[in-house]
Length: 539
Image (cartoon, rainbow, N blue to C red; front, side, top):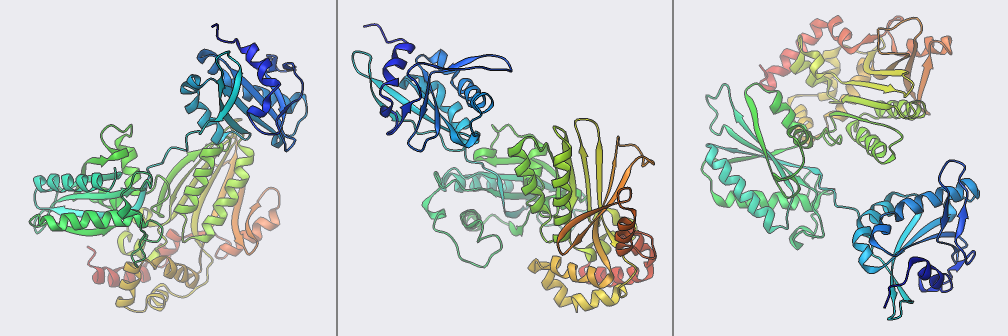
């Protein structure tokens, strides 16, 4: 028997749309023509109304070759219904009807479109009797969103006496990953390359646990964890996975092996230390040797700055017109500015405004948010301060070439107590400092210290036609945070308000950065640096 043609199926189906959904009825029995003032015309196979009075674009595909056109057709017709028939976008949805075999070609593409398209999109397999007449339609179960195996903050360090021991340790770790259900792990080998004397275990392995996929994980990881360890509440399965790995290596009794806790950002410190060198990366599951990642991607995953998980360092860019990436970009920035509500508010305000102006342009940000002025003094004074002081550097470039550059800084308002006095008041004694350092509360103490010193976070912005040095045609603005949120003051649009905003953050009319403040009070800074370097053994 000859298989029915597509128009024959359409004529049979249009009179019996309830095979697809109860209450579905055709707007007209013929194909529904749509004019198009912007190009190609077209006709909807079946335009229907559902029981909620929504318009439903029913696209029928009979062969595998025509099935490939289905997404193009429903996209076009939904847009034309809005433009040419003036229908509300939220009142339109679409249905793709195809033969069972044709869904092998359609399933992946339709699943992706259904998740990200603004209109509801569904698929149905059309079943025919021996005579080629429609007798039923089965709803297609679209594919769920692919599991995203990103790295979590569950990290650990392992040290070995010999390179062969490290390889043995990694093999044991890989075995545990397999036993726990294709666990995604990422690790970096790093070696002591200088000043090796007194280092009993110079071969390191930095390990991070990826998100646990509950669909494939061992049941042992899905029972949750209610202990006090950091991150366990947010990542219980991943923490239990790390516990299983550490227990396995502890039982192996590798001579001289030691373990230490780690956190996002620590690998960056190791990479910057001339005594250590990263030798390469290892992974299991999504991060094994077959993955498409480059070494720089793997390093960013482990350091945490790829998504702001390190809450210290972040570099990223996005276009506001790419909605999915823009949402992720904003989320990563918020994460990287955790513990710094002032900069978080100011940067969010700048991004809100910049996203409206750049069109199809780009916005990029580099953030260093340690929330620890005392650490900058201890490690950076006097010649390396810029490496440790907080910063925000941002650039928004419109598709027309207009630039907005923003720089975040700590500024001194000319008031506040002396640095040694403020540090002693906040940190009390050496025992309290140690408690703050290892208890993860330095960012809270840092906020208190800045307030006592008269230092505050601000954003300084320049808007102009290019990236050249500041000129008379550029607009200068200062962003400050008030109780009602972030606000920008323009030197051009409102000179008096701009002058007042600058006066609030300046000392005697001059904006003084934290670097200038520290150099201005160099004797006090030297006293604090010597005292706390001696305590924490920094040379």
